[in-house]
Image 1: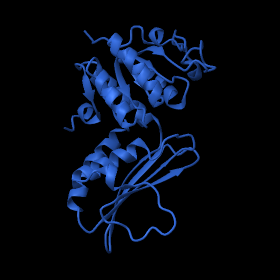
Image 2: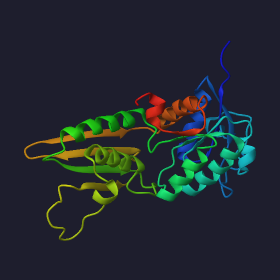
Image 3: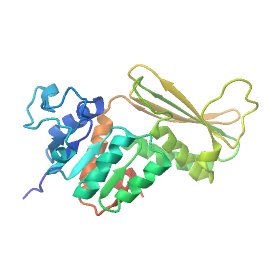
Image 4: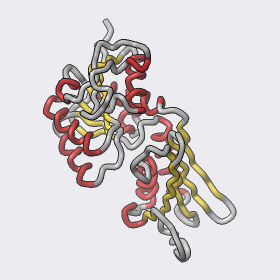
Length: 270
């Protein structure tokens, strides 16, 4: 006898990532779309969330959070920090688990997420790509081996619509490198250079941000030494990679106790 499908609600369902998630859920035999949420100002309210695929899901997009979460096992949320926190508060009350792909949280907001995770399962990662999470492990190893004589710079590029910078993934890469080196990213990160900056401080980790066109997400960590450079890169060509990683996270989370998890837990990389 097969297991029951994981019932998944999608936040931001009429956005670019929301539609990719809906398509992934509808195509996954072990998952079921249970609800579709969007903001009150969305022109998509009242329409079928699968209409863009020429399909009928039997659901309608709603701004009523409790209606959209009815019957859901897991909510997948790639929206904005304030919206995600509002969704999470209700999910914690209802016992709905949450996969958070939203980025741009500050320290206080992250603390709120941790508090809600005491009541329901939360899987939070700055990037849902399986490849990116493998790269984070490679960066730890590289940083330890290249701790002396190499300057470290992180370059990221995204589409023109992205609202936060550096990206959550770039910051996660910086954290992985800083932790491996025994540094605090808050004190060693350099986010911009202009004018006469003086020589580069070898203890810093630099960030450069590019925004333009429809770039899905490119990240490179550059270890620059004397006479050689090492570059560890990940380039996403489709949001489908984030959607598939999110479904893996939802499947994992559906069987877990309350707590805060990340992609290392999902992929068994601990």
